[in-house]
Image (tube, rainbow, N blue to C red; front, side, top):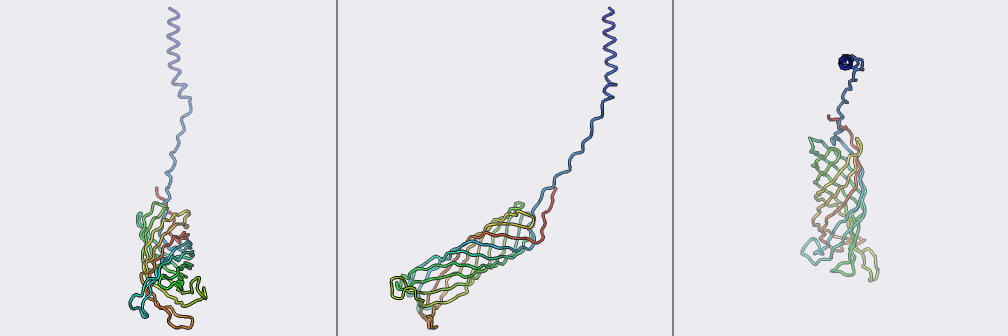
Length: 255
């Protein structure tokens, strides 16, 4: 009986002491939740200037016509004038939500050259070269933060040189028979993908096609006498790598 009594007293005493012990424990510290992290939103708006370089090919077909641009005499064949190019661009873009709109002017030096032996006149070798070109375009693009895909279109101007030489295997091989220079206007379309790798810097790749149609030209002998008239069709395809520096349009923090 005494054991039961003492056991009951011990249990009660332990129960009374437990709250007091719990009260002596240090209060649990309160930790403030960390502030939300700001997501960086890349803004493509602003003026930009840049450089570009790459390669291209101009497909040209020559048709001999009667002097003065009359009736067709016959086809002389085609060739691809290929080579490299380097230049620069300047433009302005503005962004609305994910859509990006822009205007751009571009000027390039080029060395797209090629030749073929005339099918109609086997003793002649027709040669062409693009020395320079310019593009004046509008852009419409869609941005995924710092990645921009865009299409472009507008006007183009190309500086051409045309020469006729004596073909290999004939007396005087390589002698210049006739030449002319031409500045030709046309249209252009293209598309590009650009990546913003720093607040004001972006790098991208671009493809452009230039439509130049047909043009009838008279090539003159070295003495200035008309030698031959040809109707020459031309279009250009090229791929470029571009580097741009943008003024304004900072990265915007969005929570």
